[in-house]
Image (cartoon, rainbow, N blue to C red; front, top):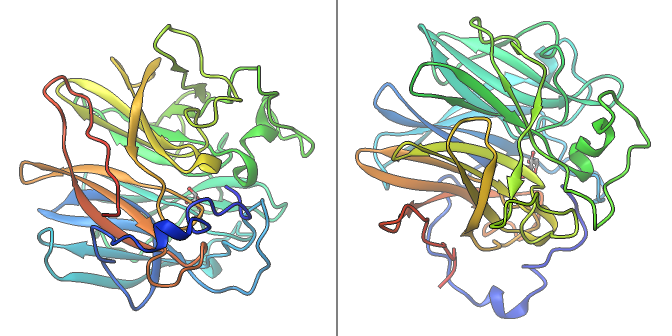
Length: 338
Ligand code: FUB
């Protein structure tokens, strides 16, 4: 995650374009929408953006969020309910700063909220909090998930009932500081001609509170079977992992960060490798691009954000639009502006 190069908002032409969707809520700023169908409704687990007064930088320090609000809606286009504060940073025992993009899962009568947060040493870890209700309130575990690091958890339930967490993000998301297996504050990004840093996957334990294995690399290959290179920054992974299954195939989607696309790759099992297929969402207003994909009542939807209300990269608003597949299973590219 970065700060300075607002590719889209610097494009004066783009500012004239009409958004295809409206913000889902306008009384608070929301971003990074992870949508799920729970109890017959759509629940959205977004970041809750605030004006924290922190100067913008390439580490994303200006994204200094302090709580989560969960949103729900009975139908697409229907009323959106903001369920209020579901988890506050002051109630997370290990908290340092910055509650970034969360996700949620349901198993055996309990809801789990997974969230990235810097610990007291300013190292991003992934935490978990539980509730009996989809909108919380959630109670955080005393410690982050053992062996977790970096940002942007996505928890996917496979059809056999297994749960997997995908995670990671470069730049301010710190993934490059873990390339030797432990935290190295000086850890740098790969050179352009080296393989791009891979996002991670770990199967969750039965109690949903820990990893049942050491995180593994999620390989993203080009059409020739070669791992994407770090220099291939219109295609390679940056942050915002999401996994969904369609017609028996596994679709891994993600943001390319500094080139602002949501791309996808297809695999035949949760661990990959995944083969790069194309762009799901073109750059939106603001620096970040972050999404989720969910099926609801027979249609597929892309949840995403832009900065329509504020015009500021760290004060975003979540949106939704329909996502369509071609007969061969490829996804039709979405331009969020007309
Ligand atoms: O919202 C904070 C960060 O911005 C997220 O964790 C990234 O994915 C980016 O959207």
